[in-house]
Length: 629
Image (cartoon, rainbow, N blue to C red):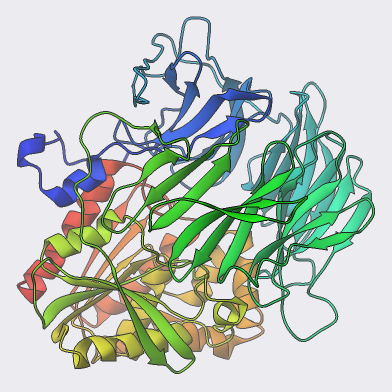
C-alpha cells in the first residue's frame, strides 16, 4: 500500500493546487462497437484511478476494479459483454489479463462509488465480482497489445518477457492458446479485422525500436502482407497500425506513416496491396493521426501542431476535409459515434479536462469538487543548435521577473508537452514560480527529423536545447539565474540528473522522479521493450558501445553535481528500476552531497491521488527549504 496523508481536508481549507489533484476526473469513454450504449472509462473518483462501466441507456455506472495501487489498462469487448483488465503486482506491469461481465454479478458489484454522468446515473452495490483469468494457459508477462474478436470468444494477446522476447497468441475460450508469432525484438498486436480473420502486428525485427514495420497474419500465423518503410533507403521511417475498417469483410487497414517527414494516415488494402495516399499534408501542418467513422465512410483526423490539436472529418469518397470544431487547446482523445457525433477529451493549460460532444453536451461530468483554473500558457520560440525550439511558459498572474523558475522536463523521450491541463506545473505557479517546459529534440509533434535527432548522443542533445531555452529565460529577465530548478519524471528525471552533472553551474536545485540514474544497470534491469529502445537510441548494448552508455549516464557525472538533489522512485518500477537509482544515491552519499530520497510502494509513478499529492508536497517543501521562495 502507498502512504497516505490521512483524512482529506475540507474543500474550503484546501489549497487550489491540491484541489486540482483531488477533483474527480474521467477519461474519454471507450464504447463497444456492437453495443455502443456500453462504455468503459477511467476515473479517480475514489482517490485511486480505476475502471468504471457505464450503461448509457440506463445511466448506471459501476466500479469495475478496486486495487490498492489502481488500474487503468482495460478493454471492452466488441459485443459489450466483457471487460478485460490487466492485473499486475503493485505497478510492476508484469501480470495477466483478467475479465468480468460488463453487468457484473447478479447481485451487483464493485464498491458502489458513483462518478456521475450528468444524467442522474447511479451505481450498483453488493458483492464483488469474481474476476477470471481471461487467457488461461498464458503465464504472466509484460503486455504487448490486445485485440478482442466480435465472436465473444477470441482474443489476440501480445506478450513480452526477457526469456521469450515478443510473442503473440490466439486465445479462444475453452481452448489452449496458439502461438502465431515470436521474435527476439519488440513487437505487438495492432488490430483484428472486423470478420476476425486477419491480425495486424507492428514489429521491429530489423532492430530499430523507434520505427516499426507491419505484418498481417492469418489466424494460423501465416503471412498475408508486409509493409516495411525501413527498407531501401538511408532515411528511417516508421509505420503504425491505426485500425481495420469497421465493416463486413473489408480488408482495408488504416496505417500511420512517415514518408513525408511527419506522421500522416493512409489506407492499405492488405488483400490487394493497394495503398491510398490521403494527401492531407498540403492542407494540414503538423502530425496527423486518424480513426474510422463507424460506417467506414470517413476518417476522424487528429491534427497535432505546435503543442495544440484540432479535429477534422475526411470523407473517403469525396476526399473532402471538414473541420470538427473544438476550443483552442489540446484534444487528448476523440472518437466518432454511430450517430455521426464526435466525443472528445479536451483541456487547456488554464482549464481542466472535460469530455465534450459535437452535439453540444458534456458527455461525462463527475460530480463534486471542480478543479480550479490555472494560468494560460505562453509560447516561446528559441534558436538552438538543432533548430527552433518550442517552449511553453506559465507565469504567476501579475508577477514580474526575474522569477524563481522551474524547468519541468517531459518524459518519453518521444513525447511532447502541450497546451493541456497539468496539475503539477500549476502547483509550482501557485507557489510563485515561473514554469518552463521545453519540447527538446526527441519530442514528437515537430516532424520525424526532430524526433529522431537524439540518437547516439542520448541525453546530451536534449540538454543542449534545454540550455538554449535557459539562456533565453535568464537573458530576457524572466528567470532568476540563482533560483533555477531542473525537474522532471521518467526521461525528464533522467535529463534532470544528467543535467545536474553536465551543467553543474546552471542549476540551483534538481528534483528527479522515477529517473534513469545509472544507464548501464538500468539497461540490464529494465523491461525487454525498453532494452530494445535503448539499443536503438545508443546503437547497441552496454557491452557493444560502452563509450556511448558512459557518455549518456548520469552516474558518470555524479561527482560534478553541486546542487542539492531530491529523488523519488517506485520500488516496483520496471522502466527505471530501483537498483540503478540506489547506485546513484550511494555515490551522492559518499560525497556527502545534500540529497533526499523518497521511495514508495508502486511502479513508474502512482495512480493514488493521496500519494501523488504527498510527492508534490515533498518537492515543494524541498525547494522552499533550499531556495527560500
